[in-house]
Length: 378
Image (tube, rainbow, N blue to C red; front, side, top):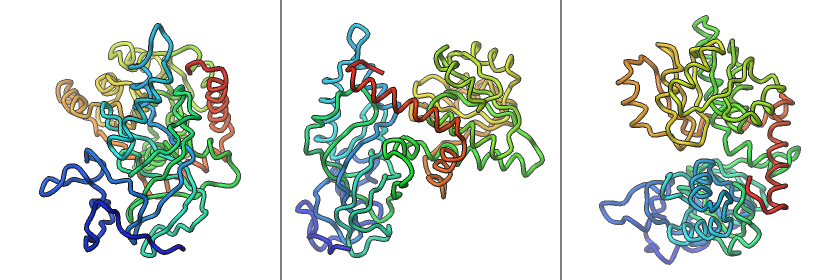
């Protein structure tokens, strides 16, 4: 390991570093100082504190809800203005010292190569490791040095050059040798979802219950992994909900879901009717869609005493809580926080072991590569 560089110019040299990154918070300061995720601005100085790691950035993966908001904001006459999206991402990073969408509050993650490791870092990384960060870009100090000149603004994956800082309590995983790094990045971006779904379904199985599992956004990254995880954990009937005929044609042949229902997850009556026709209501509902307004429809589609996992940064959690109260719904609601011990290994294992999941991810990757080549929006 290399030795640590001197502390940042923004902080007194006698200041101790914090394993959760408080020492990198530039705004707010003083008694109002907060954790990096909630902070307005972070210090991305490349000089390390002893327990930090600096990563040379290769690719950012923007959170789906964040990218959708940016793309929708900069859509003109039905086409995404990629240059405008690119400029806004650059402005956010330059202003905040991190990639945190000010509207959604979410970020994403990145892959890169470890270029320096502080002597007191507990992460077990060494210089040269090819890694994916498993903590959000919304709390990761980040600097971009290439102006994102190789990104057209039309996809969630962003080729980039710069550096990022990991704290003592950050999480990173070495990229596997047997998967395309871009594919691994896609998987690790959502690896918290299948691990949490597996845990919840196993809880039902331990009580002798074979739950019906409903996944909203079943053809997407987190949705397809959640279906596969639920099947492996012992779920009964699996219902995948998709918003378009194209996505139904993608998901139906895979067999990941027993029934694929076409419905708008934002429509309370439309969704509940579709789910009922598919064999619901569900014992476990997993919300993976990247648009707001799915809280009450998910509640209506879940049986009394059931569980709803909100694994979407577009979720309005106040609306979910108040919606359940207003509907007199006795449901347990879980926030998918993106971290479950062993989550990366769980998700990568599903991609390796379930051909249908891998084919969906590879098709998505090929589609994104094609849109970048053609210069048209995904």
